[in-house]
Image 1 (cartoon, protein in one colour):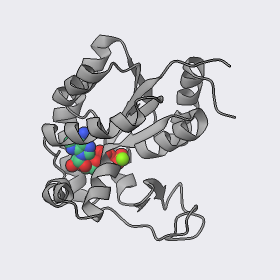
Image 2 (tube, rainbow, N blue to C red; image 1 turned 60 degrees about the vertical axis):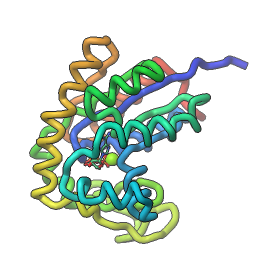
Image 3 (cartoon, protein in one colour; image 1 turned 120 degrees about the vertical axis):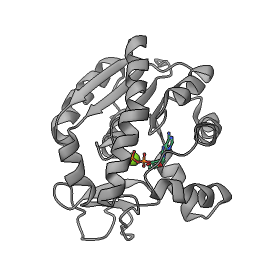
Image 4 (cartoon, rainbow, N blue to C red; image 1 turned 180 degrees about the vertical axis):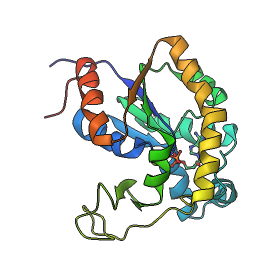
Length: 219
Ligand code: ATP
Ligand code: MG
């Protein structure tokens, strides 16, 4: 048996750049564990946990939740998967979060999805989500097999409260101001890999080829 070293990856990109979709493909193809800060926060809001209720107004307004809150949440969840290779999605989003992560472990690769803002704005308004799994659909280019229902569970899909045009604009601002510096942070560490394009299906083969060189695909 060949023991593979633990592989730690982060996926970053503006809201709606396809992080969730690409993460799903990476997980399926390469068998990494997936941890999404957005999915975790939405699960907390749905379950009406204290944290979920506190963070809802912040999230619905398109602002980032406080660094200490999200860092604690993610680093706690990471303890459950620290024996596996993993992919972090939506975290870190600020340099301070990246530093918190660095205090715990180093990241092997940061996959940066570089998608033009114009494309993003169009996408987000036609996006539908299966809340329990985080699976995302788009009525234009990635529709569910049955309208309004998740392909796997047949449960209903929802639209996110923060996918309105005004909130999307605010989320893009937050991305520019707070997350772009994270790209610089990882670029200076030599682990940033940027993939540019307007469509996930166009970007995906490049990501797949890149990861295949680092990891052996799952059969
Ligand atoms: P996508 O549209 O690809 O899902 P997103 O960035 O718009 O990307 P999520 O990652 O799902 O959306 O996050 C939704 C919201 O949750 C963010 O707008 C923010 O309020 C909050 N959030 C998620 N991750 C973080 C984080 N690391 N730091 C601060 N706030 C976060
Ligand atoms: Mg997401």
